[in-house]
Image 1 (tube, rainbow, N blue to C red):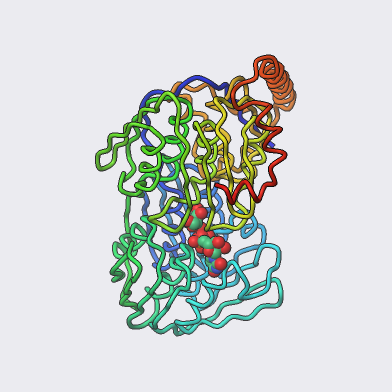
Image 2 (image 1 turned 135 degrees about the horizontal axis):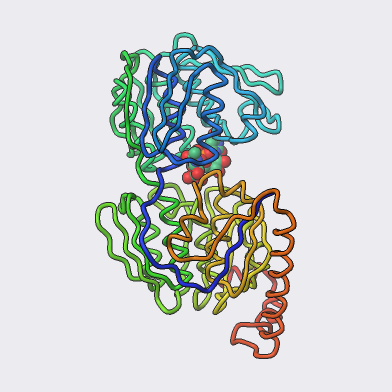
Length: 468
Ligand code: UD1
């Protein structure tokens, strides 16, 4: 398992051009199979999820080539309709190939990770949408087979604005004969980008980025070229990292309008922001202020930045409350932040966070992509050295997090997979540092140090949250 090491308490400063968007490029790659021809995508990030999707497309008979941010996909040789279990396990979002393969080939086969039953969460909305256009499903318990040689336009109503279900519905609708109206669509900017991509391919899709999308299906498709927009989640990660490390940064390449919920929250926390169409300037305050945040479907606060916001709240003055409404189990980063000295109490989908004046370096583990990036942000605001294992999760969505942080003046590096000894040495130093800090803290108790922790331990968790 590879790891990264970050030395904290050095405010990050400087400018960065943000990588292309993971959540925009993946559905475009899936959509490339709709056309029997070539797709060229520019500004493609070199991230594991992109490599994984390239591997899946290759295994289906397409040919993919990525050079210097330019991805060429030739899907004329597509001959497979089945995505292997290992691929599904590596990247759950490969489920977006379900609608694309069904639309192109009239059949698709996927394996559900963990062998869940058909129709149960989390892809029930995808299946309902495809069924409304004439798809049929059967399963032997492990493999889900979708068929629909003659899809016909229809009326789809999504009961929740799922990003993936909206994308799958669009892929099938583009290939179905006649008009499809999809209501209750996800309004994420990446859906708008996907609709532009589909139109560039010859489809007729209107209303992308709004709650109702209309597709005139069955039109002839052709080769397409598109530049992928900047990654708003990566941009948000760096804005939050700069805020909690007391830094000053300029980011380029992401539409500022796509991060309004985040920049508004940062302003409420005391950060100074100046924004142009695709440029952010942020100057952190001496110390962030506590806020209350609830995640939700776009344009609400993005769940993908909830962990990084939790890291920022951990050093904000006062008591913050963070509520996760999109995914049931996404407060897991709290456990790792506690190891860095954070004061967080979680109950159901809510976390109550009492800000410390600073965190301390520790050995922590990235349990998922966004949680890992949040720990890196937290490490910037922590005294001493932090070692974050599970770097492979971070690489799924960030091209080179350490390179980007170094460009902003941070001390960050990857501890190579075969450098176990080095990692262990760093971990030992890190534990020693943390111990030293604890001893210091015990000698000079801060306003919010040990005494507060003991008090918090006496307050039943639920009561604390209800008060908040
Ligand atoms: C996409 C993003 C992911 C982001 C998420 C929410 C990509 C590649 N991934 O994931 O980064 O965190 O949107 O913004 O774009 N659900 C169901 N049934 C379904 C589908 C979804 O119950 O059939 C539930 C999910 O369990 C989850 C919620 O709906 O609780 C949101 O999921 P969804 O919007 O579908 O997320 P993804 O498309 O998987």
